[in-house]
Length: 321
Length: 303
Image 1 (cartoon, chains in turn blue, yellow):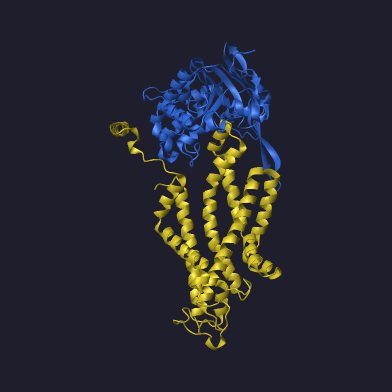
Image 2 (tube, helix red, strand yellow; image 1 turned 180 degrees about the vertical axis):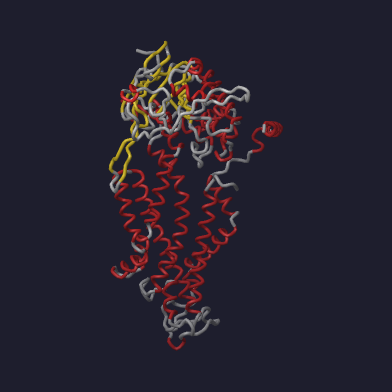
């Protein structure tokens, strides 16, 4: 028995590729292909990787917004993939999500009060005046004004809308929040406001975050531990400082070398990866990274490296590490 | 940036938080307020109100019966006795146009209702169930679409018995496919939107997601399209009547009056001119109202 709040075991999500007149399944996109990790209560686990590496899919599978193809998602000791629809609906109080797009994630035809208050209506927790009070409280918690409840989402800026999304996620007082690139769509100046808000909320409400992002600096700022994904696989998972100071996987090394340093005199060697990310329709054999890896050897082409613990808490999936 | 933010806070504080925000406005009120600002749409609305008033009060307004034949007075130009002249068998064109508004407007309305009902039903079923059902319904829709609509209309009309009701039905039955595709597209894209996912993540039931999140967002284009479709159906009926396949004699519709006057276009232009103006104004009005509704129903557009 682990002390994880959430544990993901060998999670897989394959999307069918259909074609032809009667939509036969032609192929499978292996968006997430055997990912395992755990999140401790109260911590923030960052999940980084390029576009299309499966990090968002992983987040959605955890919440069962997408049905995983196989694997286990264990929340507080229970495999929630076995839950019925009704059990799942109740569990939704415990885990919530904050979306990337502050425009698409709010229903343009509902007032902010209805958007945030929907959670209470859905779970029959409060109505009328009581609901309005709770919505007001939530608006204040995320730094908005109570009278904003009457307005429509289009009357707000991106940062404010993201605050509305956060208030909605907080409404049910969840234990886990999946933050799916919550700041990628915002101005840099607003990003830090939202990140700090998320940090404050974590302290105040004892939240656990799975923080999905592609910006390494953002992840470094907010995470306790960081996982790196490449083409549907988790390639490295380590405490934040350890990952940033001594990355073990060649892909992580290359990623970190790409972080810009705001000092013209400080130049460091960039590792430029050649080529593009291979298609997840037809991933390379063995280690999926071998096609672009500067250190690849014959073994990498043949067998897929398993995630193993190099030092306590530092997991790497590489034959050479 | 920061200064502006601070200023806002200051203004708000000195007047009290709620002073700047007007009382909340219901969705309906907001739509009406925005619709009223659209001048052409308001003109269209007045024209439509006028037309429907004509149709409702036809028995009071018509100076004569629409079927009373008076051969000695045929093809008379407009006069005090016959405001719009008489046709080739001496019927009063004014009375026929007034009575015709009943038929033309109701054909438009019912045909559009049939088309919308079918379109929404088929489109949303396809989008909701997806997979095989979607494939079958959409291929069927495409087959219907592949026929030139008007010829399909002509074929069916020449097969079935010609009655007002059948004409309405047939026009409705031939014009749903584009609507079905539109509704399906709308729902498919709304289903993938993050706000739908957010509702699912909150634990909302399917019914709630459909009725609170998807349909309200999909309805605006449907309402707009319905409005324009009424105009389109009136035109279709007129075209059919013009070819002699529309509403059977002696019932007048704007199209059939046009048809009757066709032969006397040069001798007695009043027979065709007046119903023509009515068709033109009504269809135009429906299009303007549709335009106005489209802008008014979308809260994302600025006032």
